[in-house]
Length: 153
Image 1 (cartoon, helix red, strand yellow):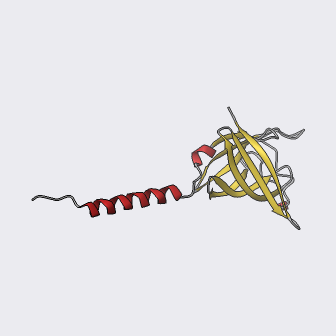
Image 2 (cartoon, helix red, strand yellow):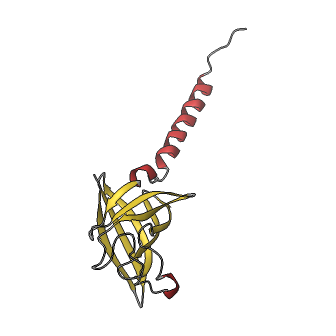
Image 3 (tube, rainbow, N blue to C red):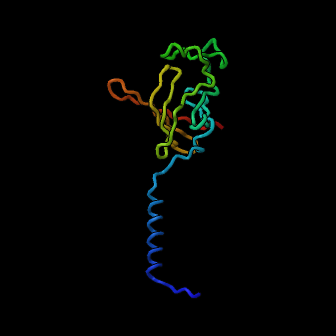
């Protein structure tokens, strides 16, 4: 059985290949979840470990400078606006949670145990050893704060 070359078929295949490459190139960039994983040092000196928490990543406090008269093991979430949560330990507390991919970033919630409140959060990898955490709350208008965390060595 002899096959013959058909230029119109080759042209169709070439067009299909170009269209596929354009579609692949146009796909939105996705967050590299492994790049966010690991231990990160906050400006206050706490260490937050970002890892899998079930089906989504989260960030848990694994070390911090305790307030005077307390230890890392016995410090409680005393500033929490929800009085029912004030007896929970700060060690192991999820401070980044409900994280999901949003382009190259992660979006979710951030909790600040120093002030006792949560905010919407965007986690951006600004370099291989830096994360920018942007927390925003709406009071009368939207207020945002940013922190840069550095990778623990």
